[in-house]
Amino acid sequence: MQKVDDMNYAVEVNNLSFFYPGSGKPALRNINLRFEKGKITTIIGPLGAGKTTLILTLNGLIPKVIVGKIEGEVVVDGLKVSQHSVSEMATHVGIVFDDPSLQIISSTVKEDVAFGPANLGLPREEVIKRIKYALERTRLLGFEHRNPRTLSGGEQQALAIAGIIAMLPKVIVMDEPITMLDPVGKDRVLSTIKELNEKYGYTIILTDSGINIEEISEITHHMIALYKGEVVKEGKPEEILTDRNLLKTMKFKPPQITELALKMKRPLFKSTPVTLDEALKSLNTKELEKIRFRRLHKKHIKEKHMRKPIIIVKNLHHVYPGPPKVEALRG
Image 1 (tube, one colour):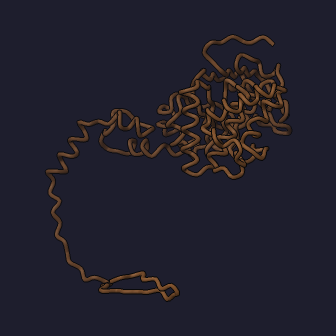
Image 2 (cartoon, one colour; image 1 turned 90 degrees about the vertical axis):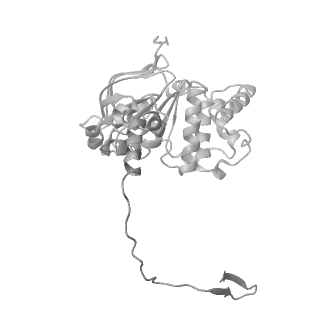
Image 3 (cartoon, rainbow, N blue to C red; image 1 turned 135 degrees about the vertical axis):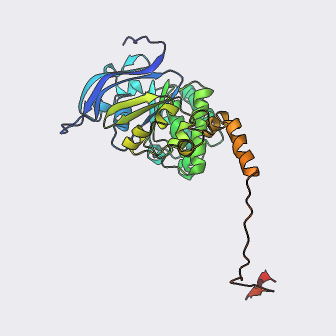
């Protein structure tokens, strides 16, 4: 099929609506979006907003596997999704889901990454080449012979991303990519996503239901707010995350630094930050100096009242009986 030429956008969604079978209400209603090439875009919205439904239209899983009534058009990497099979679209756009363990299908890391390219019928040499290519980009070189089930949550999610990269797509979509991870795993995955974008130029689309908005905003270039199947606002993260009415509607909390800036009586920041880096850059140093000066010249002399201690401990020793004896307290 002929490609639709557009130099600026990796994904275009035109007048898209979707109805699940038996539902009178659309899961998506008249969606019109453009996803810029080489950028990280995050779709935010509460549970049930339509985020997952939207991303599943990008590779044709909706409506070709998950059936329903669809209207409008989706174009990914210049291809009209409706004119291509899901397997064809897999080489243009890959989707990573929130639970990495559900995407692990092999007994070694190497075999797991090889699964997609091998199913394309590629020569063995090409498959091996793609395994190395994908593992390098997800910092998993040296893990080739590990059992994926022994990896940490962050490493498993990196493996799921590697499996997608091995298909050589231009666009990587991740549905709630750090929701199931601990803080260490989140840091690993977020830094991998950032590197994939900045160093290797991948167009990345993320979704988040508000749980990890603080971390996600650190790496996001553009943000789309989805609510009840409709796009209610899009723009830079600071435009979305400082909109109190929008956040209230979606029952989202802003990042802590944003909340602090909005609640402060004095303008300590020149603009409302959504990340710590932005907070440092927009810090109003003159106002900060005024506050410090006032505090230095304000009397804080308070009379200290001596109180009788409730408990006094002197020369306390304790030995746990053995064998061997353990001296726990030594005076």
